[in-house]
Amino acid sequence: MQSARIPATIISGFLGAGKTTLLRSLMEKTTNKKIAIIVNEFGSLGFDGEILKNCGVPGCTEENIVELANGCICCTVADEFLPTMEALLNRADPPEHIIIETSGLALPKPLIKAFNWPSIKTRMTVDGVVTLVDAPAVLAGQFADDPDAVAKQRAADPSLDHDNPLHEVFEDQLCSADLIILNKVDLITSEQAQQLCQDIQKEIPKAVKIIQSSKGQIDPEIVLGIHAGAEDDLNTRPSHHDTEGEDHEHDDFTSFVVSVPMVKDPEALVQKLIQLTNTHDILRIKGYVHIENKPMRLEIHGVGQRFNYHFDRLWRKDEQRNGNLIIIGETGIDQNAIQQALQV
Ligand SMILES: Nc1nc2c(ncn2[C@@H]2O[C@H](COP(=O)(O)OP(=O)(O)OP(=O)(O)O)[C@@H](O)[C@H]2O)c(=O)[nH]1
Image (cartoon, rainbow, N blue to C red; front, side, top):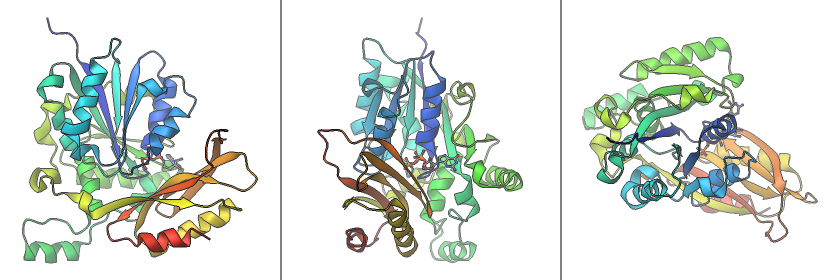
């Protein structure tokens, strides 16, 4: 008799939608199961993994968290993802559930397909693809297509369907989902949330449950235990990756790390970052900064023009108090100008 397959949950959602926050909340609330986490990042610094390892939740240990940084998981499936999964499965004491946080730019479908790889197909199944949506970002039109531009493009080349790479990633992440979480509803009205749920339902080809949340506060029973078997159900999940092959949206985005000297006033730094976000095509900023006379490091998050920060932990004695910010933006962004602006 074949033994039960280990379920895996894929958490998808655009940059800054709240994936790490949800993951942390799921780990906090799930104490009866041995969960392993795979965290994938577009940038080269393992920032999300660092947050989880420092969050103090008992299940979030070094051993349980595997980081796959430097590229989107959907492009490195064979080289990195599959060996990582095999290593987890071959542990003497394998996990009972695996949660994979994809990078905000990853297209979920190639990852779902990887579960049909012979070495893991008989031992694992995709329990569900959960896609987080940043409600205020959608409301602000961040993922909107420009219908006129699309029409013109289609006339020139019928194989193209969109002019906005953000929309393509957004659409792919929605179309792959078994469950959609409209997150950050604390920042919008309930009428706006309802309207967004209706708008999202129109974007996707099948009926998918959409739930609302703030800070990823959701009962883990809803998120873990969907029993979708997504790898056997690929045809209902249309993706731009199906037609574009390896040459897909990631070419439109870039990521780099800027070092930031010690800062006197966090608020002044945030104002500068907002200004940079207004003048350059920056989508996401995250990292740690050294604040003058403060023994703790400052964790900063910028999602579009919305920034927040808090002191996360004491600098360690053996640690250089280097400030580093990961910047993710559209290709062609002026890295030198951004780096220079942050040196003063
Ligand atoms: N107001 C509000 N803020 C939220 C919510 N969920 C997450 N955030 C904040 O949004 C920022 C980004 O959250 P993350 O959980 O790091 O988002 P992410 O999707 O993991 O980000 P990437 O991995 O960079 O794509 C952080 O500052 C969070 O505190 C929410 O429901 N409401």
